[in-house]
Image (tube, rainbow, N blue to C red; front, side, top):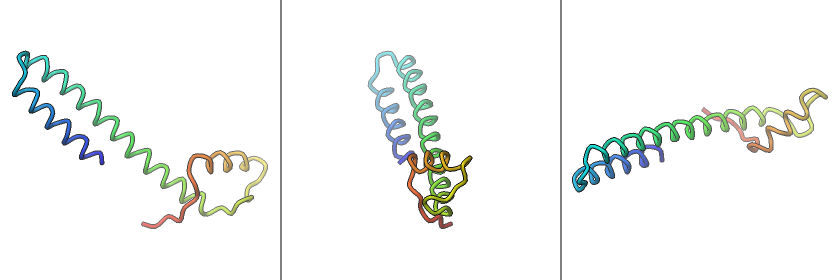
Amino acid sequence: MSEQIIKSMEQLIEIAQEHAVLKGQVAALTSASLDAVRICTDHMDENLKLKKALSGMLFAFDDGVGRNWSADLLDYARKLTPAAEFKI
């Protein structure tokens, strides 16, 4: 998904540069937009990896498992993502 977004942005940059009267300004603006999209997609990818790792860790715990210090943390983690078996 990230690669598709970036490719679409690159295509938009090319189109804008071909048809723009103020090519330099459009190029700078679209280039900055593309950089922002790359940063966002990197964060989205990292977030998905972290959710996958967290769900795998939660899978190792049965519901109700946890001591007084960890029960609240486990409950909060389960609200973020459901437990899932982690396979490589």
